[in-house]
Image 1 (cartoon, rainbow, N blue to C red):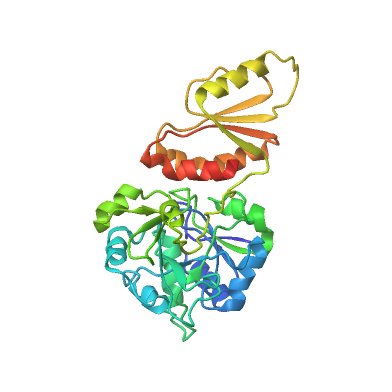
Image 2: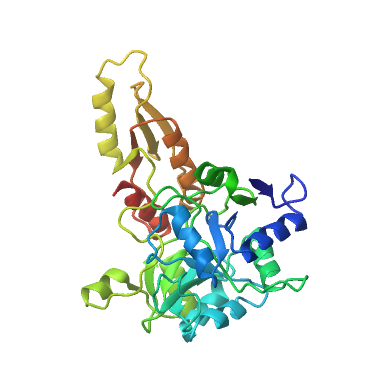
Length: 353
């Protein structure tokens, strides 16, 4: 069931009854769909192992694949951090000050006896303080109940889709995945459109585990430390914690995704143009930035924005749209090799794996 988070269609004034109803579901050990600025999450009380287990079951996600815990912003996120974390390195504190609330997840040492199920059994835990006003209203309601109800310190919320599939960026996408049985708090389309940047803070220096809207350069500037890569430490036999969205194959639609440069795409399109297919329905969706000549009815073309931010904003919605056309293949022009495109390139590379 989709429940509007706003009083009116202008999406400005929050609806207290909707926030309260969603908080009640979380306190009772249930699941909800909730908006964030990145993607919609499938949320549950991060401190309730049974509730967290429902997330894994609903998504079909392995129980050792950790979840990100979302914390309230009214105290700068520090209440949630203190509850779940054993210690916070100075550079991690700098990153919180610079980017919270926002699309940045920090992997921190976990306090013993707290959040083990959400952490996938690891001794570290991923925390994020989301910027979306609906998510923050829900988290505040859970932290500061007005009716004597139990305090909830954080909401574990991976993307609200079946494991490995395309992440949802609207309430309708979540409904497509889980149907009417799930209460979905509709906060409108997600502004960022791809999942958060993930930085591991457990190894004495910041380590980039997943790129996102916040770039590696921005992270380095904020904390005054050079980022290490996961690959560099793995090569030194220093494996780090598992993290959400870092499997080789992820974010995949039903159609097979293929990444190509513009020259290879045009060559493939020219071959198709020579094939006779009168009255044929499209079997290939094309997502491209460069001007390309499409002369085959087998191809349905879609233009990709020329800049990284709008491309990220629409990426998952566009993959879902193309998939819904019933095509067998999705050909995508590879994003530019530039830092601001790292998040989009990462998601497309995993979708094509």
